[in-house]
View (cartoon, rainbow, N blue to C red):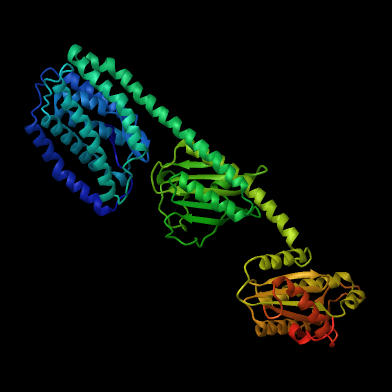
Length: 585
């Protein structure tokens, strides 16, 4: 079967244990194998052995990476080596090919433990397969295609190799890495498929070597290497097609979202499931002066939002991307360590950072990081670039939608909710299952406001309305709804507020209006200085379910309380609906 290596990060204690196990087991095992399985007569065979070793090393340089696990196609050649020269030579050449694979994968100093781990695993696979071959009566000197008894050990060898490889792979992932792998996944499927192609070629190589000698290695070696390259390219093409399809699907999902938070949440969810990402940082360009960190995602959820949330041009990687207007792709920490943001205490290796552009202008920067070296391929960098374009369009659409929504829901003068939004809000509360907790609604109308406009001008009236909106919001807090009902009428909706608490809030509102004069600067008086204007308000209040059966009726009852209980009773006072229910409408 395909030789599969295991990759990931493990604790230092386990890394040390792996090296110790290798030092204690590997040399002794090699010596014992040499003694127990004495190699066949190798005199005059060294050129052939070197040729087999060269072929295995070349093939090892073209691995597949499936589910972050490398698969290299030396199993066909090692099969031929075992049948031709015995177990000892097969193990030595396989171990050499493994070293070539590790060098090809550019295993860094932090991952050197992968050498002893994989060498021990492959050693175990080779020994188990050889034992199975002998138990079934196999003899490396007498394998023949003409005898069923001769082929049975060969079949047993192949099956033992596959099963032992899979069992050990799952075992090491569980014990060393603490990761549970599925027994049936894409990696096994690829191993099975490639084995159907590679093993028969390996057996042909063994037969041809028996007939024509070392020339067979070169006759079969070229197509063998070609098969390896073709399989690698085929898998790469399949992977690219898969990522392109996923990228298109994500793009469509993004453009369907209308809220900004939903767009960003979906983007982070999709991209972290698509790529091996540990951290996501999204910056917005603020006033073209600095980058502001608006989203920080930690896949392990161990870090809080960073305290430092601003970067200037060419500061750190993200600031460099903004300043240079070009994306960057790094495979290891050494490549970008000088640009590292020291205020962000995260340890990572691979990085992709790209500008977010809208209408030929950079509006933000996306930076994704992984703890693994060489976590992102070049084509994945290109795919993230495509996703960035989808994200930019979706964010632009969301901003436009939110601006339009705000204009339709907000009063342009006071920036409070308007009458239309209030009505919809109350109707939604009415249509939903009946609320259990009480709801109080306060309706206020400024007294003699027409005289204020006539005396100081409409611009002064607007100043007063704007200041009143601020005072109301301050009194009731952001958790409650404040709306401009129309003209000089305002509504405050207090959820989870019973009658007496609502009355107290209404009285505070009356006091903050009547006791604190409004200062207006844009008046029509002769004097240029700002003037103080005393204002009072008549306030009516109604409470659900005390005064009505549905929340939508609160406005009508509060309006009645205001006119009958406050306006007609002398103004500058608070009236509750219950106090005026006996009065004629």
